[in-house]
Length: 278
Length: 306
Image (tube, rainbow over all chains, first blue to last red; front, top):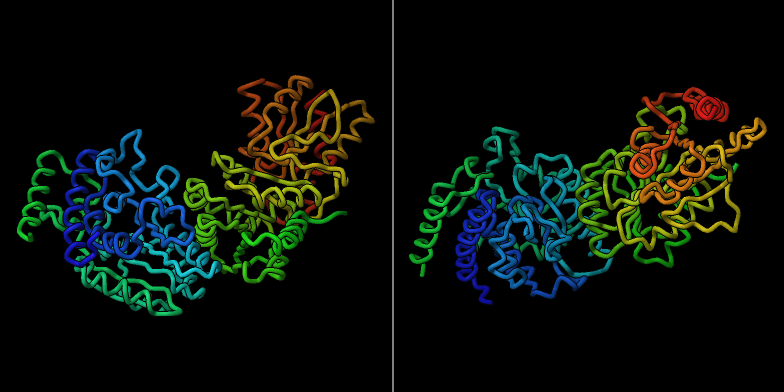
């Protein structure tokens, strides 16, 4: 697989089309948060975790916990790219016999490391995985992707306090800071700011990047591999619905699937963008 | 008087620690009370003090379990089981083989009063279909249950007492997960009981025998999965069913037995247990107050059977 930044960005943009197709076929789901997340997940899974289809059996594998479980269409698309899910299976999302549950389920799909969807729980699970890695003396990394709305959960702050106490420098959290949640813009519902200051005060190594700039994402992930003794949190500023102009809105497309016309429009725009680049 | 089941638990886990490298133990600032401190003393590198963070402890233990470890997470039962939805998702739905160790169950914790008393924990855990629930009755059974749970590969809840309990088993005793444990045979009624109240129920049965009432007493150490086959056959044979527990009569052992019998063998039934919030007092005074002492149990059974 070509893991150059250009190739990763192209993959991410192609997977935006997968996401629209999946949600359109399911007639439900969360486009805004999946589209804001796809660039981050592309880099994390394809380049940094880089697992092949059988790697799930390896106890020393790197792991990803998608704490914002509603963004799972983006993860399914990336797992398909990684050869773990057949591409044609993607459109079974949310259907009765599908492994591709509306929120991730480890029992049906072993490539999912932990079930999520009830917000605030994934970081604690990732922390436990990082503690297990330390106990085993393993160099494996644990990645955890959270959403900004989710940062309002008390359990997240429990884990933020605890992970730095345990010096979990093998834990890399990426915050998909897309500024929106169901009831409105995050800063109007329950403001997180000054977030970087709060996280530093909790003894985390904090970086702040543009979450749609593949070079910035890659640079931050690379840097997080090296800094010792502190857990890492990358605040990735993103745009909800990124890539589809009419979906780029903090709340409008949180949990609404595109209809036939909207899906066609979205795919046309994404394809035009890809053609322009090639 | 024998030991508190929390002490038996702590001792057994500490004995197993050195030879079982996959065991990891978590506590949320109550290790001296839950007795997880005994494990911490022998395997400090596998003991994790989480501070007063029950939710994070549940999640971190799930992450450990999903990484091949065998976690035991310890706290007062009401504090840890009270984080129900985190248990539901991070342990239940994920099928993480975590054992939740809830100590200080029931009104028998005494003076600390309601806020520390777990009276609804069995009811909550019973709603999770893959959650095993074990409440041992004495030292030998607690030790056997801990040995069983170390190798058990699914979610489990171990419910333990603060107070010391009398031994009801001898060295011959064999713990059989999921099986009813017949302590005293009898034909007029069957008493299903669990945990700290069992010894009192046995004593009450002996005393009622002198009045001509012949009770069968059965210890239900495994509340989930319940030994439905035994419960139904005992109900068919005795025609009268009594349950006794230091827990809410809603959703606990009484609820479990009522559900099983309602479906398979509707039978006259009396549930003895808690049906209100607890309060402060000595354990003995609380058992008297709520009718869980020998006299209270005898009074209720006399009225019910006659």
